[in-house]
Amino acid sequence: MSSARMRYLTSGLLLILFSILFYHLGLRLISQLYYLKGQENLRLDLYGLAAGNLTKALEFQDTDYRVWNHLGRAYHRLGKLKPAREAFRVAQKSEEAYQEAAHLNPLDAEAAFGLAREEARLRGLFAYLQPNTNPNPYEASPYFQRAIQLRPNGVGYSYAYARYLYERGEAEGLLGVIVNLSRIYPPVYGQLKKESFWSPAAEKAVKQGLEKAIEEDISSREAHLALSTLMAEDKDFAGAIFHYREALNDPKAVESSGDYLHLGGLYLESGQLDEAEDSFLKALSISDNIETGLNRIHGVYKKTGHSGAFYHLFERARTDLPSSPRMNIVIAKALIDSGSYRDAEQILNQLNRKEPDAEAYYWLYRIAEKEQDLDKMERFIQKATVAASTNSQYHLLFSSLLGRLKKLDRAEREAGLALEHADRPSAGLFSHRASIRWTKKDYQGAIDDWKAAMALQPRSASLCARIAEAYINLGDQSKATQYYQRAAQLEPGNKRYREKYDALAAYPEQ
Image 1 (cartoon, rainbow, N blue to C red):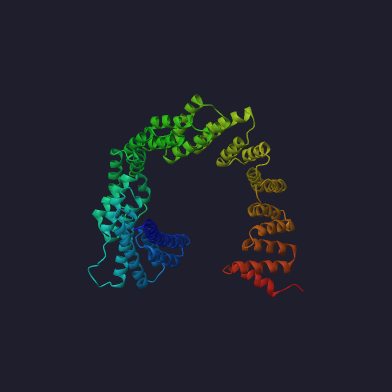
Image 2: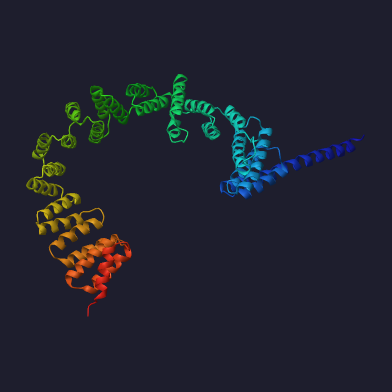
């Protein structure tokens, strides 16, 4: 054979090989384009289009397990939108797609879980469509077990299996899954507690799983925290304290004020006051804001019924930590809560002797209020408004007290200052001043304020009725009729508004 002929033959063979290669590459490229379109359809929740594009992708290349997986997912989501009988047929298509994906890649956990999920759906639909047919031919457990075997730390897989077993009434299997779930992911207990299958037996299973997590050093800090919470809920405070301390001793733990606040609360619950103090002082020593920390600690003492012991903690804090006016306010509040008014007064007066403090005067006002001493109430709330002249709440309290004392001009002035310094307009503040003006028989002023309140609460029937009454006192029956009509329309079930409107409308002004 001549060399020229050999070259021609070789070139021909190469051309045929390249043609075959490019043909297959072209098919793969077309398949990938349809696959990408199907993925985008899924992202946009266009499940029917997704199924169509993914089916088209398989026409050009049917050996890619990823495409089969996505087709199974598309049919799964599409089936959720269909009536039961059609949903059953779509679920069968989804199952077939996942079966092919699992056949092409037996190690793919997603395909195994897809099969489990679809088998569970088919079981439910079959029972609904054929309630008298037994046994049910669909069983998802083997697929769930396969998915979990392929991905043993897949929390979502185990969680879905737990719900399936609960629906099947398989208590023993459910508890086994709960043990494993708690072992591989200790924080899951918080979600498990919200499930309908939560029970004393489930709680026991969670504790077993958490103990296994600690033994195997799987998120052991989170496991200790979870066990502490569960034991505290069971009033086993000794166990709760032990596990919380173990969590704090974890070398990966970052020390925080909140941790020691919580530990102090557990000590209080167990009646260990000295240990609680030590823990709270540790919390305060590393706190960014000692005053806020003291407020929180005071709340814990109140909640656990140990308010009287808070003062001793405060004395230690004042000795060991930098003091401030706010710290003294906190202890004064604690003393007021426990009824130790004279001790609280002493602390607050000491503050005011150093420098007038608006909040100190406010709490002195509260003590006087508890003792129903109107003179002291007036003196202290007035001092608070002087020390904090832009505090709307103090002006409102002063105005309300002056109203009780029938000092109406000053009450109106303070109400105006409360409005002036409020962060935003308030219907309640306008109504407060309107009531004072009404008492002063300044009916037009009251109307102006109630209308301002109505601009903020346009559907208030009671405001309409008040405006109507003010117009009656001004002798403007027409306006009064309009506002009572509006009140009756806004609150049609109010008999008094309807009767008032009917009476006014029956005898219109001449």
